[in-house]
Image (cartoon, rainbow, N blue to C red; front, side):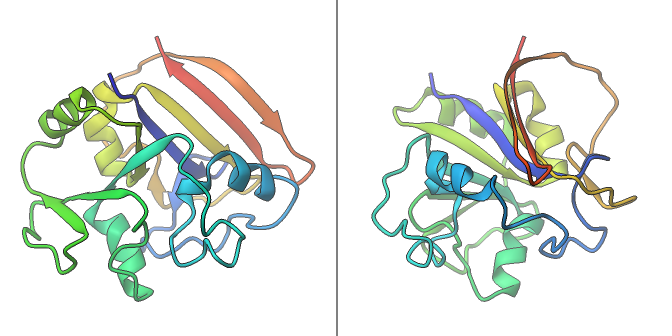
Amino acid sequence: MRKLTYLIASTIDGFITGPDNTAPDFFLHEGDHAQPTRDEFPEIMPTQLRPLLGLEDAPNKHFDTVLQGRSTWEVGVRDGMTNAYQHLRNIVFSRTTTESPDPTVEFVATDPLEHVRKLKQENGMGIWLCGGGKLAATLRPEIDELFIKLHPVVAGAGIPLFDGEFGPEQFDLTDTQVFDSGVVHLTYAKR
């Protein structure tokens, strides 16, 4: 069975972007954490940036599918990218937009949980949940792993990691990487 991993950058206070859902400019893009992230997860780099990062021909190591909520997808659209991840199967969940403006992006208007349960039964590599907070809250029952790129930033407000109902759930810490930049990579597995 395929694994669903929520791999996301977060502030210390648990926000993945600002309140206006624009591309967050407060995360550290350079530092000793950047290259290890690119080396381990080349597939999370947007297709347009891969040649600039020396990753043009890098194979996907963990994921062959990316999931996004419509608001997360729109961040790329505002920057002129209707499919920021052309090297992955790109699925966008939306109740309001039902037809994709890009034939390489699948829009799904049905129940995200049901759809992900079917995806997990298919053959293939892992599934990357890219964002956002509402979709993460909806898919929380199916999330197998959390990979949090914790940045040394406090935002005060914004879109939280999980924007949904209260319901504590425990995960086991399986790995940590601490960088001089202050970024900490935390990996958790569902109990």
